[in-house]
Figure (tube, rainbow, N blue to C red):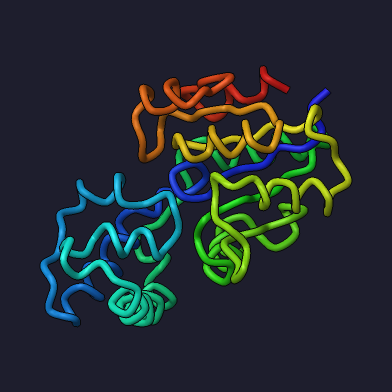
Length: 215
């Protein structure tokens, strides 16, 4: 029986790509680097903000000092503009309500930095909807390292065999495998179905309500 469902955030619960792209382009522009079209960003995201900024920079500028400088500009802008265009995917609010009605516990495991992860979850779903909300935290490796999932399991007291992990990328599928939990790949997010299949998704769903049949 499934008792805990862990969700990725960006590309799974929320379509955040427009606001992420705008904030990265803002940071690039401030520092004299070329910007990117929106279509490039689904393949930049997924491994945390530092990797996002590194991928957006020209190859010759990809060094820790430049990434730190851009991160400060990105974070300042994103903190003010992370909800300009971001919205839950269609059917997600209804899915969350249905899961809660069934008594399932819910959690979030994101590579987005912790402050923004909590802020967005509270804004769009309300504080307390998710038992545990974890983003990228200093000193903790980002997904696909399984530490974030293991931290959630420890905090909630659930076992891997009664847990589903839901995400939209190969990183998410690898995270689930490393943590020993069952993976569900969603096809409405940032990455193609083929990436989910190639990285071992145990299940694939095309609509949020289809998750209910996997519990």
